[in-house]
Length: 149
Image (cartoon, rainbow, N blue to C red; front, top):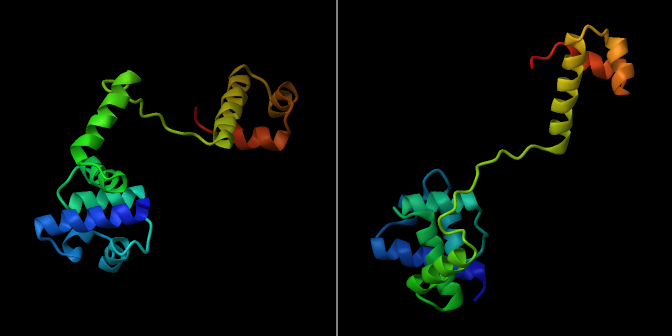
């Protein structure tokens, strides 16, 4: 079964078992979006899935376990056992995932340039001397010269 259809089936199933309307579980999204999801006419985002799970009073993984159970013709218990076994075999079941902020390479390079410019500034170099030292233009040095560290 296609994943979009499995999501539609799981969403309808969970909502129906709790006697909730599409409007009741929609949260901040339009109830017509929920209708399109249940008709497998739209794909769901991670954020929307999370919001729908909240509307169903479920943990997001509970909703996804229903989705993958439908997709694989398994029970949610079988899906969750498989997930647990996989994570255990990789020694990830009890691991904490670091919440690292992803920085765009240009942003990282800009921060590095600011640090380098300010280091040279604190060493007493002028903007033109810092530009020569770093091999960048004086206008680039100027943009970084008065930034905070």
